[in-house]
Length: 88
Image (cartoon, rainbow, N blue to C red):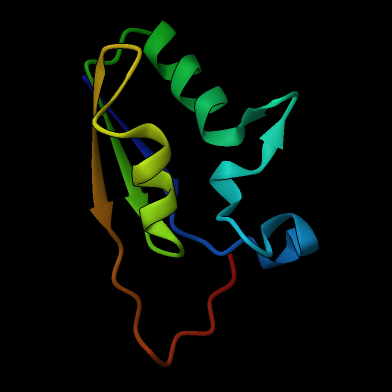
C-alpha cells in the first residue's frame, strides 16, 4: 500500500519558520514535520511513500533521500500554474 503525503506548499502562513525551508522540514518536537508523518504511515504498514513536492523540493529530497527507515520514497513534482494564487 502507498501513502501519498502532500508537501508542495510554501507554508507562508508559518512566517519565519519557512523563510529558508519548506514547511515539511519545519521542526516539530525536534524532528522535521515530514518525519513525523512518515513514521505514522510506516507504522500503519505502508510499503511506499509518495511525497508531492514543489517549493524547495530539493531540500526535502536531500534530507530524506530514497527511503525512510527502509520504506522507499518517491518524490513527485507538483506543477502549479504560474497564475495560481493558491496558498498552502
